[in-house]
Image (cartoon, rainbow, N blue to C red; front, side):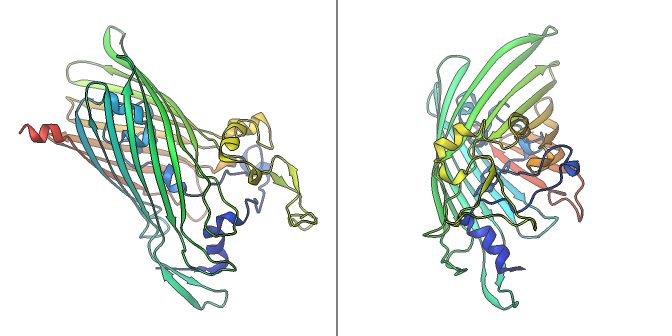
Length: 405
């Protein structure tokens, strides 16, 4: 159980009050450019939920289909080799900081026929027990914040090599419902959708059988979310993911796949606000912060935010490039029974600075597939990296094989 000061919890829960960046970091500290991390509500939607992708640097938009495909690329389900699949996933999150935050993910799919597949998933994120206190250390309340989303997806083949998919999502975020911190809080709710595509083609590489795949997924296209009746609504993490995979059958028993994804949040970049000599933000007579450079994100709709996200960074095109995250991963299978995986994830220091290596393994036995992954931070943070010692566990079931036993 943790005790958090009321000012801190207000900043976390009443996300709609403003989008002001409270500080800037000297460019020399970050290797070029000021710190200007893009912030959204419900970031739990972007956490990689499964151990296979987690071991491969968080790639997944063009990897081979499995029961977790609805998170990465709904269109992949149409090319799944098994007719039915279910996955159970569990990730203890930020265990280097606190012991009771965790992400649980249940997903699955069923092939309706040779062309169509349907999938669904449930994601639950628990933030553990929190004791709310005021500035005097007096207890206000004890609460267990939690968030969840429910998805349903549909995929269809348009040819022997190409498919498209759509998914709908309900999002619920209860961070501090009923807490009166200047204004009454409430759970945030929103609806969103994904649009995706997948292409796969058999090829030859050095006279070896191979498969080349490409994927695209625009996820979390939906309404803003608010935590108070009168507060400012915040963007949810609409995201563009593009990627490719090359899988080579080395021989009868060995195969190797290499994957790479690029990601970009399709939400507005925070502007740079004008500050006085003491570093405090300057407000106009109407009480609005004065923008020195960039655009006001609070004046944009979700659709406007998507299109403007490619050219609204205060630092211009150079800063836009910094907003692209890169994931790379490899996967080796022996006799389709045992897998070894590795990967790397890179985010620019001025946009969050997440940089880490990943590794993991998988074991396939009859009707189930067991995977685990481990994260090794590549960036050093004073006091310890919060992502350090992150483990993920996944258990996948082939129900078709189970029924045939």
